Amino acid sequence: MKELRKTLKLTQEEFGSRVGVKGNTIGNYELSLRNPSDAIIHSMCREFNVNETWLRSGKGEMFLPQEDEVSEIVSHLLDESNPFYDMILDIMHTFNNLDDKGQEIICNFTSDLVDRMAKRNKQDN
Image (cartoon, rainbow, N blue to C red; front, side):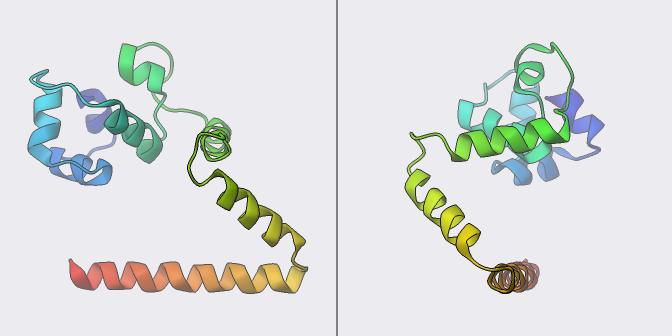
């Protein structure tokens, strides 16, 4: 984990905030005083595009190729055990059935929403 953090040039605090834990928790993981939960491991892999096999065992490449990351995300989203599986399928079907103008409107709306949320988040911090 420390090797990953150093490769990314992040402090323990920065690394931790990206995966939802405090910097001292990352320090404890790096010193093997605590073991990260599977949820934290998955969060690290998702956030930093890290190969989970590498993170757990040191085998293979540190980072996943970009197309593998997308495939992995889609695979998790479309796993029937995902509690949002039906909703995700409904969103995909509904978006796909829109004409080009409708899709453009949804994309623009979503982009504007993300911008506003990021702006509010900056103001709150």
